[in-house]
Length: 212
Image 1 (cartoon, helix red, strand yellow):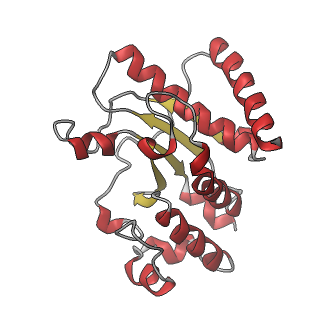
Image 2 (cartoon, one colour):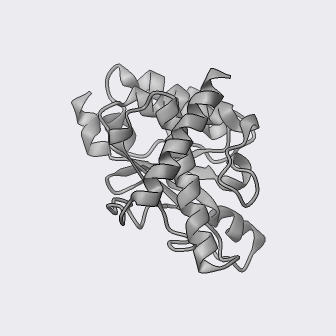
Image 3 (cartoon, rainbow, N blue to C red):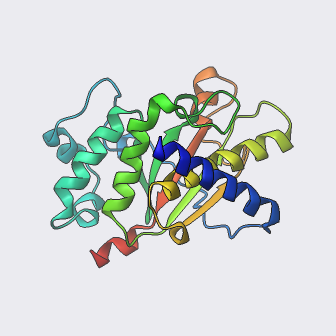
């Protein structure tokens, strides 16, 4: 109940701020998505073992999660994967890929209460690496007017920002943006492609991980 009250307060404040805001600073890495072979894990049927994660991890993984933080982050990533959230990498950016069909109520910016276990893992990974900057970017498929798609993507990004803020994450670390149907990662001509495009990405800047 306390978390819900904090989240409502945070979202009310964000609604006021968004009404007064100017064009946000663009910090989103446009080419954020890479092939699933570069993601940690390849299915969503079960939690991959630590051996599987280490066998599949890309070259940046050992450096990124070096030292005492490796075991904690590896476990968090395995459980994020189980909850349908992929951890992917492109260049110097690490991205959490959150499917909006699963984590938001249809055609709204309301987070699904049944998916808070996955959202808590997002917060956990962010808190495990407090010296990173965070960009939350919302995206849609190509259905609907441009204004509706843009507004929905912005509102969903801000909803996740509100959740993280209400959970204790420093809001000064976070930028929330929406791009509508821009930067699609699959074809909207297929059901599967449209589903992939309906997403929110949480991007962490990995160059700051060296400060651990």
